[in-house]
Image 1 (spheres, rainbow, N blue to C red):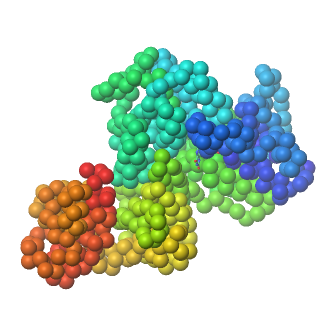
Image 2: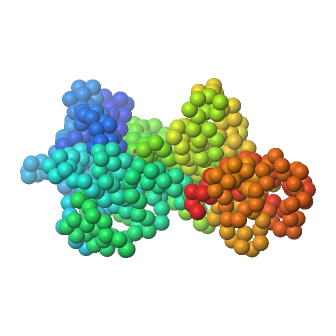
Image 3: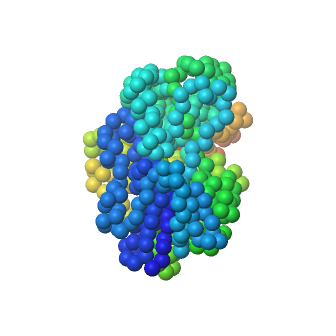
Amino acid sequence: MAKIVVVGGVAGGMSFATRYRRLNQNDEIIVFEKGPFVSFANCGLPYYLSGEINSLDQLLVAKDTMLLKRFNLMIKQNHEVVAIHPENKEIIVRNDGRDSSYFYDKLILSTGANPVIPEIKGLGLMKHFVLRNIPGLEKIISYIKDNNPKKVSIIGAGFIGLEVAENLAKLGMDVSIIEKSNQILGPVDLEMSKFIENELIRNNVKVYTSKDILEVKEKSILLNDIELETDFLIISIGVKHHSNLAKEAGVKLGSKEGILVNEKFETSIKDIYAVGDAIIVKNYLTQEDTLIPLASPANRQGRQLADILNGMDVSYQGTLGTSIVRVFDLTIAQTGLNEKQLLNRDYKVIHLMANDHAGYYPNATPINLKVIFEPKTEMILGAQAVGKKGVDKRIDIIATAIKAKLKVSELQELELSYAPPFGSAKDIVNLAGYVAQNIILGLSKTVQWHEVETLVNEGAYLLDVRSKEEYKNLGKIMDAINIPIDELRDRVNEIPKDKKIILYCQSGTRSYNAERILRPLGYDCYNLDGSFSIYSKVK
Ligand code: FAD
């Protein structure tokens, strides 16, 4: 009977332990968790702040009694593993101030990640919190109960920061978000992040981008050019691998101190394995080393390691980084690479807008979808989507397509379930395949929102083919001339032949039709990808 010891009893660790038990009823499995809870839902923590999840019990995915009875796991909460001695296959565990020693045959590290706390002048003067586990959550809740704070500043506009912002705003707090970079939500690109920024502002959350915090005072924080009154801070600027224990044992670390493992999760020391946020993973698309701290990869890795240790031929293929967040009434999701990650690669971008289900059926809402692909190979490199409904489904389809190595034009072949309340006969994912194919075949040439100003300054002619009402009421791009698409054939002589023509409408569909009318007539024309719906978000 082998002795299997797991360090860290949440996503990766517990997925490993339960799968291992299902495959092997003989070995001894013991899980050490330094906190008071195992198998809790860290992803649910922000929603407890507002009461949307209203019982802590709901956050406990599996209780220790069940883990013992059903899985025969020996769970040791409040037990911190403080040292590993690989030469003796021994660990030292601290509980209640007392150290004891345990031996292992296989040691599995799923020690997670730690929130990064920035060095800011005066930080100690103001109450500040991070949200990582249930004790951390309880600290925030009891501070709010005891002090009735009115104003909170959230440092860092990633997924957790935004979830916390929404939930504290729902409690009636005056919420400010401070972000160092020029956009919120780093995993998506600027123009897509603007939808969410607007949604935050619409819900009275103040958003400050491109801001450094110069100093924290007792009742305020000083940014580059503004001082914000604040009662307390939530810090959510990201995480770093929790790898100290492994490092001190002599396990080899890689970039940003992440634990180095191979595709079988073996570390540099025999019989020590690691999974989850603590390890460096390969980006599925680039095969570059990276940190992608997400629950689905951690769970998958835990399960796969159990398979491997039970003799199955499994190996980890890398992490795609598919992620999603709801911010008030909008949802944004992404998969694969964004444009910022593609600086040295040839790629094409398409933006589309279509309804989540048939427009004639009540309550249809728009989805804005962005797909990035490599023109030469048609490989799908990434996708981002934002909307009120149906965003998860579209990004999950594209994430699946990436794993299945579908070409971007093959998205049109996907036969998706359809009835009016659920989708459209041509789903936006199919449309992405059509649009990509048009670009690949040269039927459509596009320009991006960030290229328009330069092209116009160089003499391009900007043509708005929306209706007169849309042109008048919704705003226009620069000094665009308006010829509605249905008047185009009659008024074509008004359009100069010696200039580049940039066409736009609201979503890019009518302007594509205009492009198809004008090109055979000898016009050098380009469709503004994403058209006014994208341009107006950024400019
Ligand atoms: P964890 O689940 O963090 O578990 C590590 C455990 O190891 C910890 O409990 C820690 O106490 C314990 N430990 C560390 N060192 C020792 C030691 N020496 N001895 C004993 N125990 C030790 N991901 C998503 O994909 N979607 C989401 O919506 C999402 N929301 C999130 C919201 C919040 C607030 C947080 C904090 C995270 C969220 N995540 C989300 C990320 C996700 O929870 C993590 O990626 C995932 O839990 C990582 O699993 P893990 O096993 O590597 O680490």
